[in-house]
Length: 303
Length: 66
Image (tube, one colour):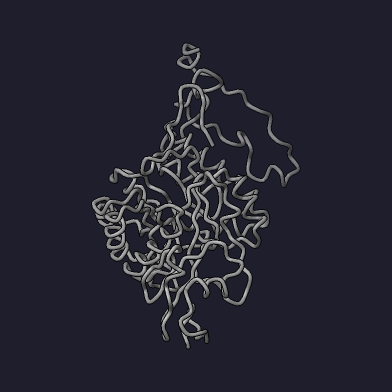
């Protein structure tokens, strides 16, 4: 989704020398059928998609997922299923053997309840794979020390989780991702847990470089609609970031001028029901007449 | 002889090649990556790779994933 408004022209996101105009990356898991996947890929306009590597089912027919992915899309194989660095490296090497490039999303998980990544093993796998020439995009728990180690290890990006995989909880780790955005000199791709386009926009508004989502789209009633909505939200969030959206404040700040008209903000507040005596309504009294409060001299002189 | 194919014990002819195993079990999968006893075997070597009893063969392909 190219962004172009007067005075703001976004540069493509560069990862390992490859340029991405669309900052929304789509995962291909959990789609009910291949038609939903194909339509979602098209609707999203995503230029980078993830796939996984699994044993071939010897008993049942399996469609070739690659048939549904446009040829000019960058394919990134995840190492899901890996419980340690060694298994992640093994999956990556198998993936490379396919001839479909060497982009790897390192994902090392040994916790089945929360599916939280093992940052330590992720660093180890990234170190090995980067030395072997892989383009490594590690999925990690947003921790500054780990992110710095991943930079040293040769990662191409850092991909912190927004919240638990598939949870749709949004940016639970927002404050820690902000630290990575401020301190890490690599693209920050928010991955996992984003359940709605507004959450994706929020990630981009705060300065993330890209967003990767899967479950929210694949499990939607109309996946292609969500794919498009995510893509638009990512572009909108990016534009807001480039446009330097103002920060949140603790107090109100009027959008229309408060001086120079009917009253001066320094005047004492006007009672909401001037002149009303307690029990007026009960006595059958009507609303008291509006009392004109004259502007003071200061206000008049300011007009 | 018996081999372990994708975690299952399978009976097959003696001295069968990896190519024959792939052809037999992966008729529809168009892109197959093979590993024998933990070592990746390139597709151009499948004909020459003769399996032995007890070999652990893994045949994998791409599926949807996030």
